[in-house]
Image (spheres, rainbow, N blue to C red):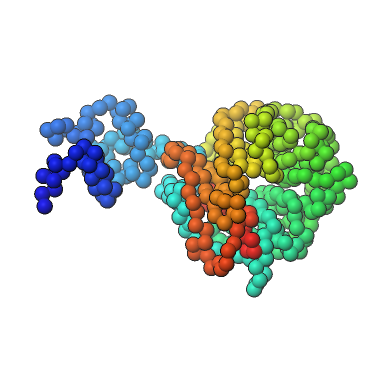
Length: 441
């Protein structure tokens, strides 16, 4: 069969479809060779790429992914020199590292290729490892809630057992297992290795993760507790009455008891590695306060009226800091996420000297009517149906992946789960996706 003769007989549309099918079956190297042929002059005497100004070449190379550029260099000596002189690979590596929001990111251990492949796996739903854990040896117990922060995963079961796992180095190690009632709200300070647990909306205890000992206990005498945040030596408690309480849990000293609203404090979160900077959500407002000289100073405020109709369940706030090695020491970069029922907000801040705050950008996304489980600076996880029998992951746009993309995730693949299960809880960080099922995790 003469392919060239048959190709000539096709109309323009059929030719494009045939070429598309051929290109999809080429290897990476063959694809780059084809691109080089297409960029030659009509007589094939010279390469157009090496004939245009370098600033134009640099713009063109921006459209190649980090894993494509080494292949591009292998096509010819001229193209290898073009890529090298452009500095595009180093630029993309810096952008890749700067897009991370994990405090414990090991730049030596995480090569550009591994970071790129990790993000690619998130966008294809390709889990490298699946682990099934439960609270009892031979009996699965329903998950009530859990918290994932830093390397620690806290799980609260309906049988009043609390477990904490260390997820460092892609392993699951039990650090704490204790019967303590079911925590309604919880938070973790990875630096101090402690967790704050709220029981019955009236009591808050702080537990040392390493020793399992209760190091601080607080009983609320001024109304129900609605949220909690812990970082360093500071503990902040929000009340249903609109009051905030700030404590130094190590010295058991109360610094502040103040009313900031007539409505319930829906969420509170301390900015990591700050003297005391925290965000609060209540009514239809988001505010950021600095605690200076025993006084609250409002340094940022946003009206959330445009998402107020979407608030049908508990609001949550998460704050992530960029690795300090990627930015100036005097300036810290943060991403603050706010999750409502079906709406996700992401705020990107730069903070200088712990008090000068600047909003870099803001992103709003209405995910779907079935509810968002958890949100991370790079992605969010949500239910696909009312029964919560299937989930999807929304991957936000990033330097190497320009489009926001949602994928259905087959969480049953690789897990020995029998019977119909629905997802009750979910949490994500840069490396892990954790799911709590109706009778297991």
